[in-house]
Image (cartoon, rainbow, N blue to C red; front, side, top):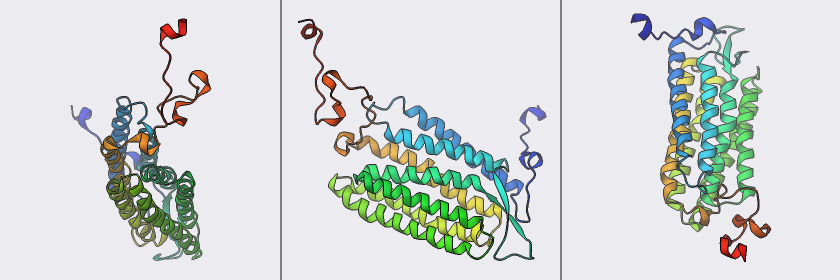
Length: 289
């Protein structure tokens, strides 16, 4: 029975960490907990797509992808995989001090941040051009931080500045521009709640990054406690918040009932989603006549 119930974390024994600043066993334990939250959330959220109405699955699709990618990323980090050892520029005890940088976290962000921006854009009713602009800003933010993390001189802070500028533009667009459009579609309250929550968390990411992969002020384990909390609040918590609030949204009015019809046109070559009212199908008697 002791063997049956024993659950030791031997990930760091199988995949030994590298570097002077490295992930600890306790840090790996925490990351396994985050992985479990993501996996359970993914399964539960995906299951709800089977009971959602056909035209109301767009948020299920978006957050299912974000939760799945987050599960994979945190599985890799908890297993002490998907990292590189990078020389530290700032706050190094001695020359040659190196730190584990997990590139899997940036893979997670490069998927999850655009998912969040698309979801906010769909709720607010902004144009597709604005949504595309916001997605590009989120990619610029993440990729700039990734390049900065792997830069081994103080020039890294230039990339950090560019990435943080992209974040500031993204925050302005989702908060100010999105709120204006959300009032037009009568979802100002819900959009303010969602955009406010997202931007509060996004505000903490530059701080967390500057203290960890950027400035080396905190170790790898404290850094991933910080990132783990932020990511859980951003994706699993936000996804279910969207699910609850969206029950009161009019997908037709928002023009986001993308999943109602297939790509094959109805009788007469018309696509119902491109018309105000879907054309009625003829009854069998009329077809026979």
